[in-house]
Image (cartoon, rainbow, N blue to C red; front, side):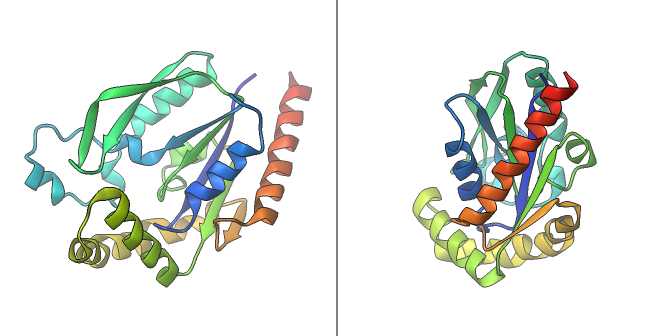
Length: 210
């Protein structure tokens, strides 16, 4: 049976990851695979660390979507895939990869998950997490400082120069592609229940078709 593919998009700090993890917890071990779009940032080994730091990672061209599509096709054919591991401290891919096996449900999560037509056309369920910009900025600031070793000034500069304009140009419009818009994100239990109901309906439909 072909995997069910779910796309979860939304601005930085909107609560996409929490929603995705809550969905994973609602199902048994090995049933749901979460693929983070950040894993597919392009390999920039040919650039210096300083040059990599200047890249606009919020632009759609920063991601190697062809590789993600190839991995989805492999997983849906019952094959494993070697997922890149991205290092936010060096702004580059690690030499190691993460091997994943096929799952009944695959979640693709990222700010641009609903931007690329070649991804959207493969999705059975499309979600957009819609959270106010001030809350998203505060969450991003705390995350980048604590988890990614960034300075306050660098986070603010990046948010002002690339994150905010790219959100308005490439992220926000994608909410109109969504089947469900989730307000506030995060611990929205009602939304998770609705998503689970939708997933179960799609699973049943696919079983009936088979």
